[in-house]
Length: 120
Image 1: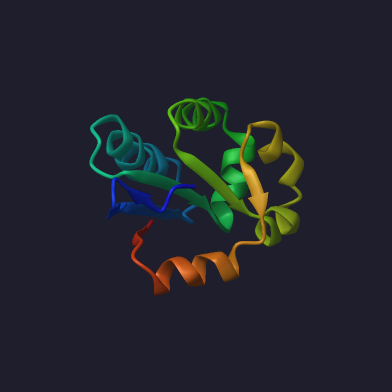
Image 2: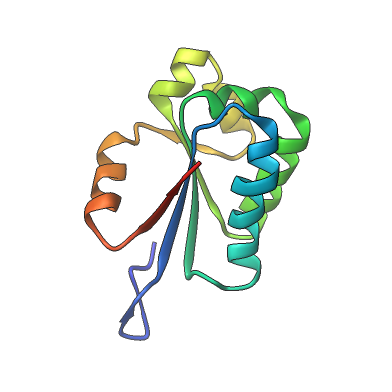
């Protein structure tokens, strides 16, 4: 991933999606994430799937379609491997194109750096 653009630091957004609520996913997490990329509000947009949202995503075909669209539009979609393992959904998320990795340490580094984080 590029950290700088033309000598300037990139503006980076991480949307931390933890809610098992489908409406929260559709009406906030996914809407803002997708529009952030679509309208160029941020240089880098990342959706972090953590906790119960991993299970919801593995079961909901409409949410899966949204995630595929995000991936096609250069939005990084990353799921917490520990959470995916707890719910037994790692393979399903990987098959959608979601990167499934241990995320605690990298998320901590994001918080300590210049990423802006929204938690939903």
